[in-house]
Image 1 (cartoon, rainbow, N blue to C red):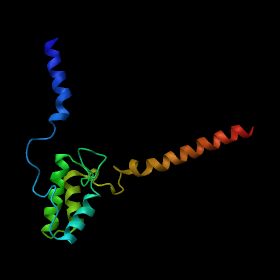
Image 2: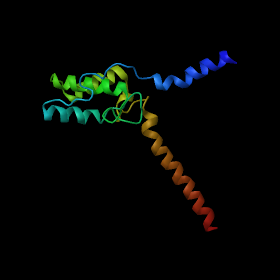
Image 3: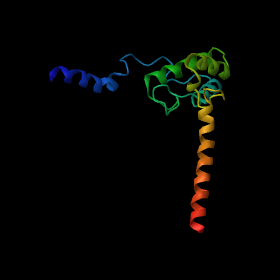
Image 4: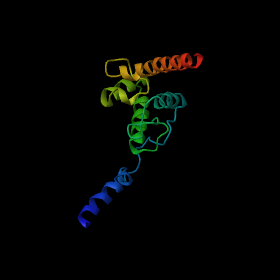
Length: 135
């Protein structure tokens, strides 16, 4: 019994141990001195998905990975890279999932087509329901 309890406790403790004890990256929580560059970085950060939180942008997330990504975005913008260039680099590194606006491809087709399919199914079900009520 004790042997089975220890792995279970470690499994339950895993989320608490997910972040390291390292200090945040240099520009994770510090704005750039140039307000124009910071605005570019911020606009880009709101369009990038936190890979750990999944439902938040890297601008909104408190996850360590999001902080590292914020720092990376600010560093590259400060070095003169365009937001599009930084976005392309992040997509090349992490895949289309990192962006809230993935391009249409065979891989992302379900994301784009599912709402339309659901709308058609809903309209078909509603039509059938209204027909039954008329009788």
